[in-house]
Image (tube, rainbow, N blue to C red; front, top):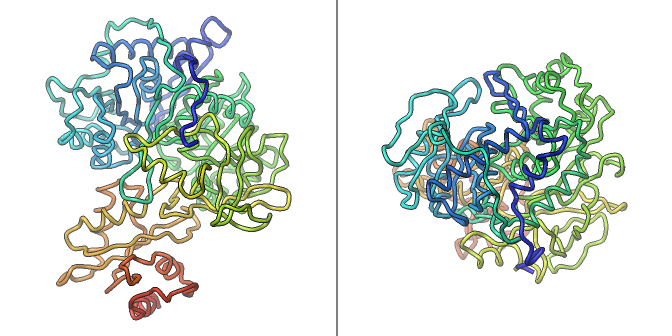
Length: 580
């Protein structure tokens, strides 16, 4: 630690492990992907066909001069070609960084520049709630200041008009023409970089989490096999976008290495009606459903009637991912969706851990609503106090992992110092997750959520520092602080306290402008739920904003704990009277 390596000297190809291994077996003509677009178009791609597609794209990359170790940015809708692009990168040893299609051009530009990507893969657009999300236009804007990018590959998905830049942009279908259907996968070292995935940190700059090949693949393959009890007859649906780690591990690598059949859906869960998911479960015969507590709470809010119209009798296993699930949502999921006969695997893991770390095994582990239950094989977590001593059962503390595991991150791209400081400096020689937890009398783990300045909003990690720097970049804002408050639907709502520059009038119009400004800078997922104007923010004498106090004000609670370091008590009083 902190630089554990696995299977040193071993060589493999991750794409070969997901595709070629199934050729010549009963699986080669089995569906790998069943895709449904938001407008209702359906495509089925077998393992053999997927292998052809990936081989062809690997040739396209090589013809563009892409070599092993080069970075490729993928900014696409949730379509099969996004998966094909990931597997083709792995085939030639290029390192992919998938950027969620909901991120702004600014956020895309930062990620491209951080990893110095040479190629961007995108689409004209994608469908979301009946409208086209114009991805190519966002890429054009992002590339105004990205010196390393030499090519853009554009998939035609929606048919909306786009600008194609001569010498840089090429249509996917044109590049594809005439490329061979066979491509010999090259073997790479077990520690060869597979992908970089950016995640919010407690400072403004997103962190490029680096995962390598053999250990990551083992973690995904093994956890998918045991946690989802994958059988050849299953149709598995993970509702996550491939822009997140869940999509990497449990749509692509973990499932394909097991030869599973996946459903992939492009659009929103409530388009055209709030029963879209249940209609799809019945229409395709989904057997395993893996989704987020935020989605489950939204389904609850939309009402049981949308669920009761559908049989859902194909389902045999349910899963939860992204944030702790509250017992009420767990019971609704169990009763309404699983009809009291499907086990629920409530999984805890992170972008950094690469694969599931704490989880029940279906049919094996007795379940408790709201608990992630027990560690997966070989994972050794502990709950400790600030000094790193294990706390008694029933007490809250910080969640650490005490031994290396195969799918752990290897570093932060281009910033090993930050990697060591962020994850390994809190307690010597062990990985600090950044989450709070407790163990009950039976040894079951209950995850409480983030301890640091990272919020979990609708299952997305959003760094408060990132939101604050976006707000302060607006010409009217002098200072800003962002905190979370509990929210029934999202888990946490984003509350921002803003101090305006002298002479600027506070208004509802300005509130809306600031919310839109944050969405423009980071993406709609970071749009603040509430903005409160304040004449000043509570600070220590050394000038540090006391977010703990703002959090207590945001949740309407009384100010507890030590306030002796507070510089100006009247600031708190005025914020509290504003609240009333």
